[in-house]
Length: 111
Length: 454
Image 1: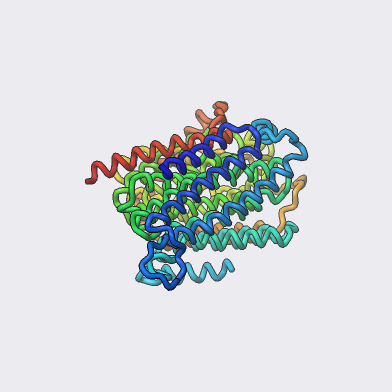
Image 2: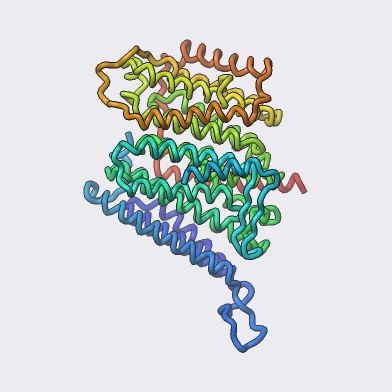
């Protein structure tokens, strides 16, 4: 069930990238998509248990798998920086194309 | 830094046993360095050196060189890593660095082209991440070898990501616009080494898993024919070169075992050609026909074009012979068509008019250009030593016939032909949409492959 929700999020984001016309909306859809991917990593990490993997007095509790969490942390940072970079690019483009319609910008800038 | 890479590449090539490093047991970063990666690292080093020398006198800011250095480092990282997550990180650093390089001129068009590139590659990498976690779920490790027991969809998702990054087949059609609209040194860098970063992991997977090998080969043939088909009909120099990059990547993939040498020669020749295209007076072939170019430029242009068409004495010949020896029977027809197409499209360069000394030359060519050419073309002659056994009579005749046929076809048919190809496939929405179609196709192919093999 949870898995289905995660894939629905990814799909929503993907369709948003295709169907939305505004460039900012496209970037937000991409964010939705990456949120879905991150959620999927967390979901897989929690397969083995829900406890935070920190050494404690308690013994034999079901820990969550730390590896996917560590990996996705890297991916989150990278995704975030890429988004920041894209938004800067969009700001620059907004000077000459105030509506930010992707198709219009494409029309103007393709040889 | 490039010099360090050169030295290291030679060292690896001479080393007999491949180096396999596993940091922090099965969860950590694993690196794999062998002969295949040495070719790629060598290409990267030579191209970067040439590009930096070319740019030295053009007054670029320090920012530009920092980006080049970052790009160089991260491309090298993809050539040695052997697990999916370090590959992911390296590929994303490549996207960011090349976005900044493409958008260096800060015009609206360059920003849009860069943004489009970043968008496409980032979406592909998201699919790739889903694939990577599926591999992890199956094996508790991100190593390349984990692809074997992983579910089919994992393979399909990872392949989609790599195909898009490497600019292969239909999802790779973002490449022509990106490569043709950026500045010449940047296109040289992108076309020469950056696309190889997507191709190299594919080769690695094909070499380690024999189930995947036929699929990679099939993509190689399709890509080679598709790319060359566009290149033959293209009227713009830089776009032609970019389409031709797609087709050459097909050659690299078509014979995974010996892809390294081909990648080396293609990287050298393509960056040389992009740098030359930057100093030509016009980008349109029609105008170039009426505007004679300087004899010296024509000479380097011809050397590069000859090498890529597979003319003997240049390393393009050795690479082509070696690659064609490794084809499977069903690949031969497709690849011969692609080789003929290569000869046709480069006849456009060879038959350009020329003159002794151009007095009315507008742009003064600085000496950095000649140094860069020296490195790249010297590399082309030098790379012959990797496969000197190619020089037999039968081997030599075949490319000569191909080239002759190609020239005849060019002079007879293609010079007058004016077909305008639709560019619909390069629209942004279509690029993203094709990705989903490709995903279904890949899934189906891998599934069918596994069904037959078990």
